Length: 145
Image (cartoon, rainbow, N blue to C red; front, side, top):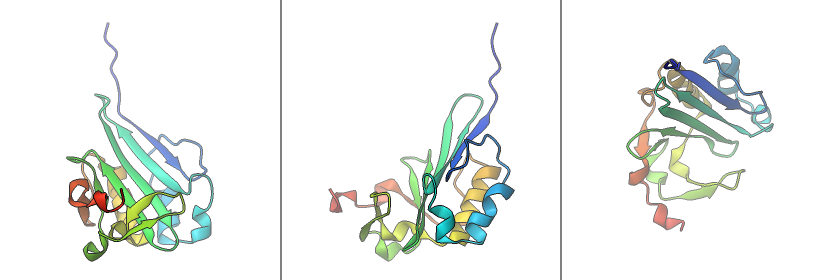
């Protein structure tokens, strides 16, 4: 007897209980009507994860920093990819509020971040085509280690 597995979302967003729905309306105002204070609760970020019926995992991690904007990480991609704001700032590393060091060039506006989140909730199989991305291999991480 074989069990049919079904695809599902597993979303951790700020201090919300874990959400298994891709209903965009519950998240949109946090980006479109951005206010740093809205993001200063719980995890101060989000993890949008989708498991397909074969248990393949697709994720979009959202890190917010009121000084820089939003940094998004999408997997799987060949080796993961990050949102791309200003390519010339990819060698400038900053530590965000969670003490995670990221290239400043990976931060984008709340409105751009929302486009990528909305697209992920509609189709988690590929990164949004409405923002730019940089492959993890194209970032010189050795500058910080």
